[in-house]
Image (cartoon, rainbow, N blue to C red; front, side):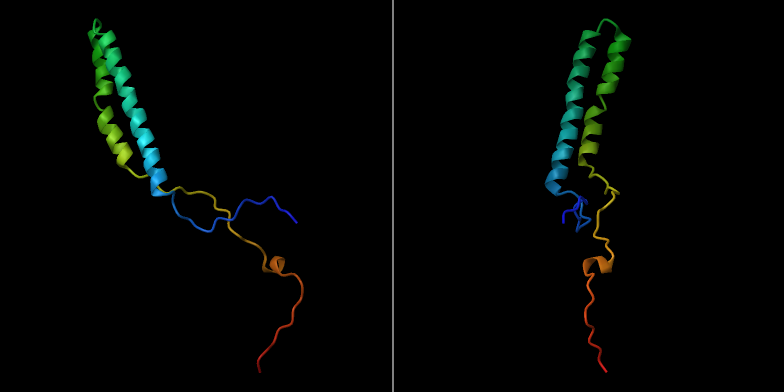
Length: 102
């Protein structure tokens, strides 16, 4: 008898520390890689001072934001957990003898 139920989760634990660290490193690298094109664009638009200044203004807080976001651990997710919620009669449906004391 095969069923297509989701696997039963036996713990509500968060992701491992290594997985969290890898995700935070990816976020940091992505944000810091956005800073290089901003600096290049500011150099390209040096003739239009207000546009170059706007691009620089965007690129200045990026390292600070990248460090804050990368050092922050993700919040615990509120996810639907598949637990073993079966009717007790479903586990053992055949009748059995009960020995009573007395």
